[in-house]
Each structure stands twice: as structure tokens, then as C-alpha cells.
Image (cartoon, rainbow, N blue to C red; front, side, top):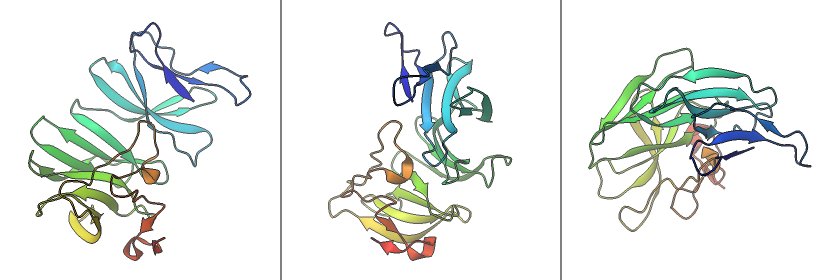
Length: 212
């Protein structure tokens, strides 16, 4: 799977090809539409989550696409201010981040059938960035500087909007950042804190074994 534009027009399309080079398929053959990868869903061999500005050139909605047939299902319609999406470990899109350029809000929904609700809103001085879901899909790992002078990673109860375990804090101020690369699955992402990732730490409170 890869995305590529034509003639540097920045209208990226999604393509698929077998490992031996056969079976080339163009999955988003839409003129003037830009495709992006939201989550490759590495545990799902058939589907992935992508973004398309097909409905509105200025707004990217999220679709679940069958990478063999190209069939797509709208998963979330962007009202125009969503800057980030996050799926849980089952590939369900359940978190969004909105921004107006000054304030940012963390949005959450229990299932894809439910509407998003605002959990917390922060200003430009405070940050709460969702990183990935806990193994049981009930809590989030977040990077935040709320109530402190530097960023840290916490286990976060998204339903109660409450910080739980402090997972990691860097000795230097403001050195915890979400370092996900485009298309990288959230739970394997580097966070800018000596490589702390889901594979390296799941707190017992989140149903994980603790530091590995």
C-alpha cells in the first residue's frame, strides 16, 4: 500500500500492489481528490482507514476501505475543524481532535455508531495529545502539560476526563512529543521520550504488564 500524486499536483491517490509486483490496483481513482492514511490497521488484512476530501475539497472525512475490492464506508464526517483522528486497537475510530487555531478539544465516542462528545478543551498554553488506546480500549495514553511546567505521558480516563498513572516524564522541560511518522500505527510510535511506546509500557491499571 502506498500513496502517490501525479505530476506533483499533490492530489495523492492510494495504490495497492502484491509483494511480487503483480496485482497493481488504484483504490482512490478520483480526480482532484487527495487521499491520506489515517491508520493502516496492521491487525486487519483486508481494510484500512483513510482520509479523503471527496465531499469537500477543504475537509478530509474518514473512510474504511477494502484494500482488495476498493469498497469504502464513511466512518466519520469532518465538520471542518478536526485536525487528528485516532482509532482503537480494534480499528474503530473513536477519538478526534478539533482546533480553531487557538483552542483544541479532545472528542470521544464509545462506538462508531455514537456521536462524538467533547471531553476537554485546552488553550494554546496547555496541551493534551492522544497517543494511543490501552490494550482494553477503555483508556488513552496521552502527552500533556496540564498543571505542570513540562510535558509528560499519562494513562487517561477519557470517560471521566481524569489523569490516572504518570507513565513517563522527561527530566528536561517540554521534551515529550508525539513523534508518529505519517502512516505509522499509533501503538508503535515513538513519543520523543527515549522510545516509550505501547510495546514498551502498558500500566497494570490499563490491563498491561507494566514496563517491559
